[in-house]
Image (cartoon, rainbow, N blue to C red; front, side):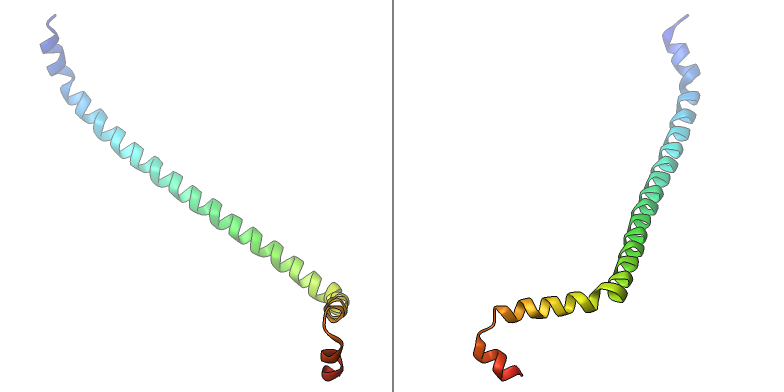
Length: 87
């Protein structure tokens, strides 16, 4: 059997395979991009939720105590005449 005849026989199959491969690779690329977007947005949502939960716990239970401590620590480093002027 001649190779030239064989290549002419498989030519249409090769063209069809190239089309299917092209469409399949495009679909896989779109699916990977959508998965990455979903993954990134999920991380953003989880980070926001954790930050909001921690912030609300901090504001309810720790802020008043830490605020007083920070103000006292900052007043240690101020000169004495500025403290008298602010009082």
